Length: 66
Image 1 (cartoon, rainbow, N blue to C red):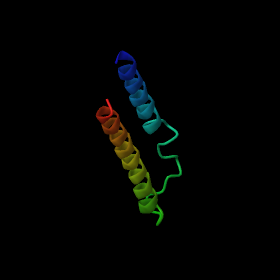
Image 2: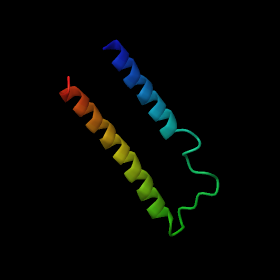
Image 3: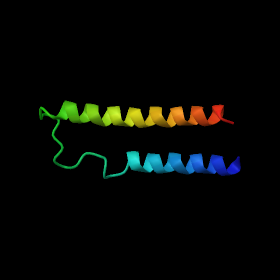
Image 4: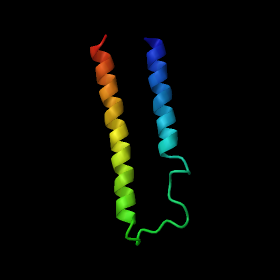
């Protein structure tokens, strides 16, 4: 059980680092006035939510299979 808790903690830290790293933040030329901006932002947020839902579904499935 300790191994699983450690792995979950490591995955949460890795996910947080990836989500908030400088590489995923806006670059200096980021333009919110562009017609593409709403589409790009929507795709980004949809992908983040999709990954979260998939991770949650996997955790629920793993708990049921115990």
